[in-house]
Length: 340
Image 1 (cartoon, helix red, strand yellow):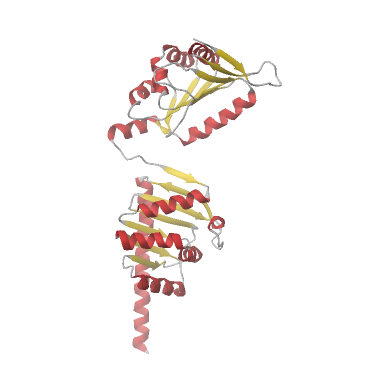
Image 2: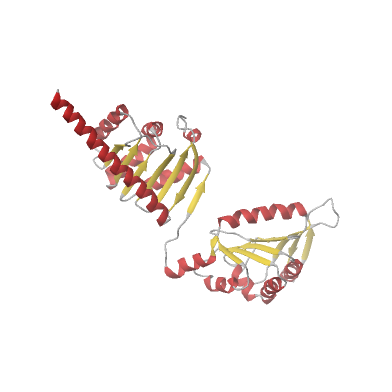
């Protein structure tokens, strides 16, 4: 088999280099040497085909075992699926920490002194092509990359339990990009089949909704065409309330209800809950801004049962308070008319 090593990097330190190695024998030899050089830690991430490679190729499995025998630590990150779950169970036995992350491609390994990567992985077969480097700047860069995706992973035991018990996959995502926030919000609204609950953070936020034709249209279509019940809580004044109620009467949207909050809210968070299954919370960093991008900050998106239930509880408590407040207001108006 043809084995080729190509040096790519001209490092200020002539002893440092970056190589691309082709051929199973060459790649395997470098991989074994990489593991033998690990003194403190090896952080490795790879796609769903890799667990079978580690377990089935004896040189790799022995390399993992030797690393831990010397007292070094291994963190492994992969995509755990129904197809590789048995391999992942075996892999858990020879690493210190193991996590799952959706959609991983290729593989990288980082130690305190070296870095390796591959884009070609075949189940239960040794690597056929690897990139190797001991250049300090590259190692630091790839360590940062690994630490970033590691934080987004979930414990392997939890993912395995989800697969074996058929549990719903729970997630909590933090979103910073305003375009992505807008996209998820619209898709979430369009996906509604039963109920939409919205708690606006203030009057300006509600005004923006009223003027935001696309969002307004999606909500009205959900109510009119799909029979979705919509309840909206907003810290709004009487003028806006009258306009909103008139607009709903004109559109004959019977399944949309708008209530006034009984008192101004201190929070700047707008909450969207769909079908009691998904929630989106959006930080309104500048409620007075007229442009959506300028108005919003971070957002969180989740289907976690405990998270969604907590926000539902907040919404329902505020809704009940609002109804009681409205009843008191109507009763006061009736009493005033009686006395005059």
